[in-house]
Structure formats: C-alpha cells, structure tokens
Length: 389
Ligand code: ADP
Image (cartoon, rainbow, N blue to C red; front, side, top):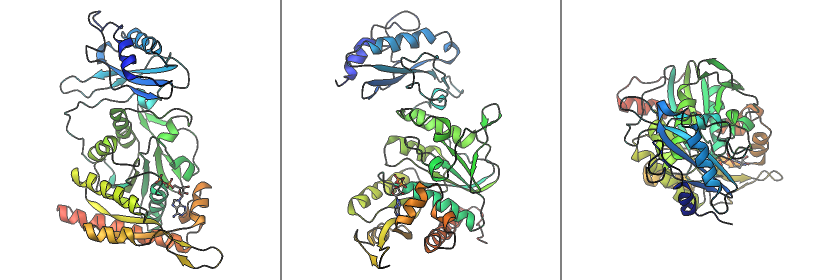
C-alpha cells in the first residue's frame, strides 16, 4: 500500500508542540517527509537547548507517524534550530526509533541543519592544496571508477592525494579500495581517515552499515559532507578528490556550493542521453562559479579482448565534440574494458593492478591534464601557479 504524505501529516497533527499548544505540523516543526516503501523519515526542528528534554516529542511523532495507513516503520530525527550567530546542530535521536535497522546513522543524527539563508561555507580546508569534484549528470557512467583511478594516477604522478566519497547514497570507495572497518577518533569529533593504496580515504560507507537505508534529507547530506570534509584529520594533501553523488539535483547543487572546490570534472559516456545529462552537470557547476576542469569520456570505445580491435560501439567521440562545442577542456577518453571493471570490483583499481599498463597510462595522462588545469584556474583566479614536477 502506498503511503500518502497527507495521511502522515494528518496523524502528526495529533502531536502537540513543545509548549503543549498547537501541533507540530502547524507550528512548522516537521521537515519534508521522505517515504520509502513502507517507511517514513522526517525531522523535527526544536531549540538546541531543549533537544534532550524533547526526546518524548520525537518518540510521540514517531508513534503518530506509525499510525498512518501503510506506515510500518518511522524514523524521526530532532534537528536543532539555529540561533543567530551559532551553527545549528541536529541532535542524536533517542535510542528507540520505531524499528531497528531504520535508525538514521550517527552521522545523520549529528547532522547540522544549515539555515536556509546561510552563506555557503567556502573557506578552504587547512593542509589541502586543492579540492576537486568528480561528477556526472546521471548514475552508472563510471564516475566512481574514474574518481578512484584518477586519484591513484595523481598519486602515481607524485602527489599526496585523498579521496572523499561524497556519494552517500551509494558509497563505493570501501569496495573499490578494499577498505573495511571504522575510522578511529583522534580527538573529540575529529576522525582519522582510512587508507588504501597510499590514499587517505573517507566515506560514508565506513560510518554506516551497508543495509542502512540511505534516505537522507538534503540538509543532512550537506552537513554529513561538511563533517567528512572538515572533521577529518586529512593532514597535508596536494589534492582531495571528491566523488560526488550522481545527478544534478538540489543536494548536489548545495554540495557544490558548500565545498571549497578548485574545480570540477564531469564524467560522461558517449551516448547522447548521457551528454544531455553531462550538460546539466556543467550548468550546475557554472551556476555556483566552480571552474570546470574538463570532461572525461568513459566507456569511450571497446577493445575486443579476442582480436584486440577497437570498436566504437557507442558512437565514440561524443563527449569530445560536446566539450568543444560548449567550450570546456576535454581531459581524455577511457575505453570500455572488462579489466577496468573486474579490477574495480576486486578492490584493486586498474592503476594499482597494472600500473604500467595502457589503461593506467590513460589515467595518468588525464591526471596530468587535471593538475595542469588546476594550475591554470589558479592563475586565472590570481593565486600563485602550481608547478607540475
Ligand atoms: P557511477 O559512479 O557513475 O555510478 P561506477 O564507477 O560505479 O559508476 O561504474 C558502474 C559500473 O561500470 C561498475 O561496475 C564499473 O566497474 C563499470 N565500469 C566503469 N567504467 C568502466 C570502464 N571504462 N570499462 C568497463 N567497466 C566500467
């Protein structure tokens, strides 16, 4: 049975506000309600100093939501409202979410809720030379595969590199880099990044169980990202590669706005549809004044494992043409090759599996262009140039 948000709201209208007047819906405390199958997720905005005391309100909202037709599970998070001048904080929900397994993960629970008109936090991260985003207009184009191999290629070219897996709906870095376990706390909220093949890595995948449903409201996504960016002991890095969630929705746009990006790379397949989506990606970064470092065409052509012949099964060259047409640099083309897939799936990306092979060569060339583009953009922005050694 489909859950109607209206029914959930009606049920929540029976829950009185913190002052025992009105109800939580009409008082404007209920966030957007996310429905996934028979589960609902939402947050309640409460004053920060009353968060603990209002735990029963959270529990009551959860119970009320469960009474709506079709709802089998409900997870409610208390989110602290922002006081002038103070950053807002969400508060850990009580231990009793309506059903185990659907409790939002700790990072979500700790997530801050940015005030709608808060200016984007664009200040850099100390110790990190440049933060670059790897993005795509849609899923499945090989964005994560490109991000991880690009990071390894930048490292192979002599740089200190980190990877931030911001694809928090489907984190893939733990699998791609064969890393398991949980990051350790250094002090307070600061986490030590994990390491894989010399890269420093942080991913939502280290912080939540794979089975945990990844239904996150936009603001929580942003604050989880901010925490992974700023509350991690990255140390000195030349480049931090951010694997963005696919697509160009509000969450991605806000991410692009909130991370101090030196530039963005758009990964596209040659198919027209992907190019249309890729164009949306370009437009998104332009909208928030993030320089486009260039476009990578992935699954560009197919190398036949039997005859070694090259086949342009997808109408190769579309991304290069499109990049030229819209005036952004073309960074390179990665072939469709089973080895790229199997090495990724096996947790040893091609750049580490065959460091001297042709595919690693392709990624190293792309990495060189990317690094040069970062330098160009820096120069254009008036900061000191980066010299590639
Ligand atoms: P995205 O991050 O865009 O969703 P992924 O990087 O997860 O995409 O790639 C989707 C699938 O395609 C994965 O199974 C991956 O191994 C495979 N893949 C990506 N790029 C290539 C490639 N160049 N050749 C062969 N398989 C690829």
